[in-house]
Amino acid sequence: MGSRPLSEREAIKLTSPDTWLTESAKATFDLLVEGMRETKIIESIFDCYKLYFRLYGERMDPKPRKIEQGDTDRLLFEILCFATFNILVRVAPAYIAAKFSTEDQESAGHNVYCFNQRLLDRLDKFFGARKFMAVRELVITGSGSKAKCAQGERLNTAKRMAGYLNAGSIEAELRIFSDSVGCAIDPLSLQITEVIGLSHSGAILETISKTLKSVFLK
Image (cartoon, rainbow, N blue to C red):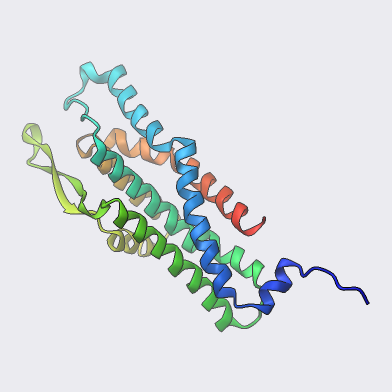
């Protein structure tokens, strides 16, 4: 009988899935970041913020904040935390189960854990290399006419992920996301910035879908 090339599924069965999952987690994160840049989500969010004040700013107080590099970093942090959480919990497990069909629950759980841990490692390295943990959250100090925007605690990946994990529902997760994005842009204008953040969640979820399909279905 003649030989034939092994299919990807057969090759995976003959080798350790951990290697494939590790490389796929890295590819997933890299493609996710690339996808966010290509769709210009951050630029779109800030453009919506600036547009609102151009249209209605004469009647608004306070005035819009000047956007600086720290604001871009803060917003990218929130987007990547939200996207990574959705991949870990909502999307990747089903793809992994289809890729490594097994009735062994322990092996199935290990595969998901391996991928998730490597993806989180990639997220942490990305933030560390760009010193995101030195960036501080924006908070409101004072009240009424004396309220102003100030810097609060440093960005904390574990804290943000724990918030999503403990949310209990998709609706609650979206509220955390919209509030986090709103505060990242301008906590003094949450009635505007929360809506802007929420309106871009669909584009983020679409980027996640394209990313996972590219990695797992190629």
